[in-house]
Length: 108
Image (cartoon, rainbow, N blue to C red; front, side):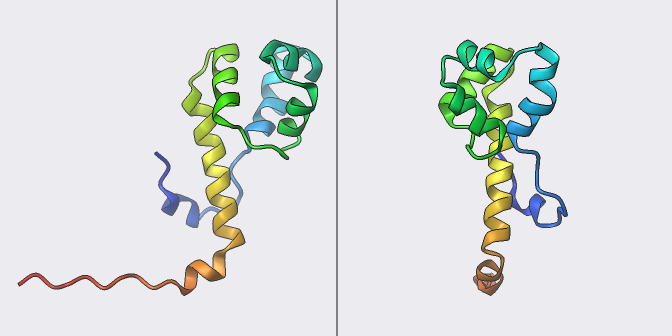
């Protein structure tokens, strides 16, 4: 499971799974977006939105990618979770800074 505290100090947004697919996976396997979409059993639009980082990797898509690329579902879900946590932290930074820690009771 991803520890959100790890992302607090990062200067750069984690790599979106779509970027990984676009920049590394598709060139490596030599497939077009349309061929990849057919292979996964989804629409070309779905693949395009994922590759353009406008669509997150869903659980269903993570299963499809894992099966097709012989990887783990967790690889894709963890990448997406890192992006989601990063985006939430940066989108709501001021809100989160305003939340104070709950004081702990001293042991008797």
